[in-house]
Amino acid sequence: MRRWSAAGIAVTVLFLLSVAWLAHLQNGGPAHQPIELSNGVTGMMYLPGPIEPARANPFYELFAKPQALRPPAVVLMHGFMSDSVMMSTLARRLAENGYAVLAIDANGHGANRNPFGDTMTRSGALRDDFSAAVDFLRNYERVDGSRIVVMGHSMGAGATLDFATHEPGLSGAVMISGGWTLGPIRPRNALFIFAEHDPAEEIQGPSTAIAEHLAGVSPIEAGKQYGDFAQGSAVEVVQMPGENHISIVTSRAVAMRIVRWVDGVFGTTRTSPINLHDARTRARNLAAVLFIFVLIVIGRVTGSIAPLWNERPAGAAGWIGVLTIAVALLAAMPLISTILPAGFFPMVVGDAQVSWLIAASVLAIGYLAIFGRLEGPSLRGRIGRTVLAATLAFAAIYLGSNAIAVTMHRLSLTPERLLMLVLGTILTLPFWYAFEVLVRRGGVVISTVLGTTGRIVFIALMGVGVALRILPGVLMLAMPILVPIFLVFEIFAASAYSTSRNLALIATVEALWFVWLIAATNPITFML
Image 1 (cartoon, helix red, strand yellow):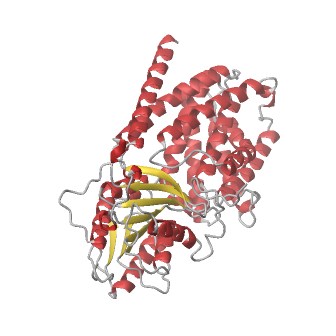
Image 2 (cartoon, helix red, strand yellow; image 1 turned 135 degrees about the vertical axis):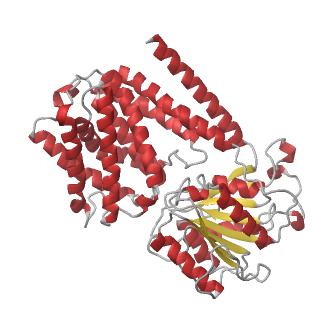
């Protein structure tokens, strides 16, 4: 026990030190500060130049530079389940190479509390967000508002192309993994860049077809520039090998192509190599690895607080439980295929996910009740300590995750998202409880194998739901992130199980954690 305690303290201290290092790098250069535009759109403004010393910080200049010395500007918009934080690596790389960047949160995303509205169905619904950002830069005394490039990823790429074909006076447009609709104006200096593993039909095909139309050639040669920057007619389509829909926004190779394109748009002549360094990456990776070990500490500590449950034998029952969960998840799909039972849950995509788990929980709980395996007696008189342990565990996970999420996604919650966390946890807790009761049995090793198998089944059936067009297709684009997240769930679950065998503790934390990620990342459609 003493060895466990010493190891736990040591890994926690190392994690805190790594987070402190990450925070130092996050607060360092390039110079940046939060921005809120007149219409409530939020974002982060980056300027070329360091944070320290303070007199060198371009935000604190006493007198504005002449316009000829001000940097050109880029407006950067994220994708559908993303925000300005996820775009921060690209934004910093652009700023390190001489460009001001305003990375914005679209309505319903990140820190922007404006409702998402009907953006999925109305062409140009994000045009107002881009317009507010461009108007701000045109009147901002620290940038050259006459030289602006608009840029976006996925959903943001679609909004970029739409805005660039409706707004005169822009210098160029960069569409990263997206771009579908042309407006009345030809976009100036248009770069279409997408990942090798982006969906061919939904992204690669349309981007290539539009580039061919603008260049006036068919087929277009990837990686070849058509037209002329000075005339505003430059067009290029690029496929980035080895990248997927998520990794493309943090790829050094992609950033290199984009910086070179922006250099061409603004006629920038470089006397030194392009700087693609993001000092935060190494610190974030170290903190993320240490956090995995911290999760073991969190699980063991909170498991020791929770009431001890009796261990149930594994045998065939655990594998039958995995099969039962699979059947429940699969059988739930027809129940949500026409009308979402949680349609009142005001989050795009999140309403479908919550509906799916509600329907699956009814089937799974019904099975447990019929066969007398609901474990009701184990909860009597023990709820208080279980809730306390779950609250402490989730609080620690929340704090630790937020500390290392500075390059990934904003995870802190607005008031609206906090309300969705509470509601969603109540709605999905029965499913996670049924999952644990059905699947987790035996000792630590076999229970972990069963739990991991159950999560793999969950993710696989999510893919089935997308293929059947019952669950939103955007979930497939998020798979590169969902898979490791679910495996991290199991690390905490196995650790908590090792000291308490308390399935209610594990299920409560899983419900909170799962819905928190939905509440933090999915577009929200209401405002308090």
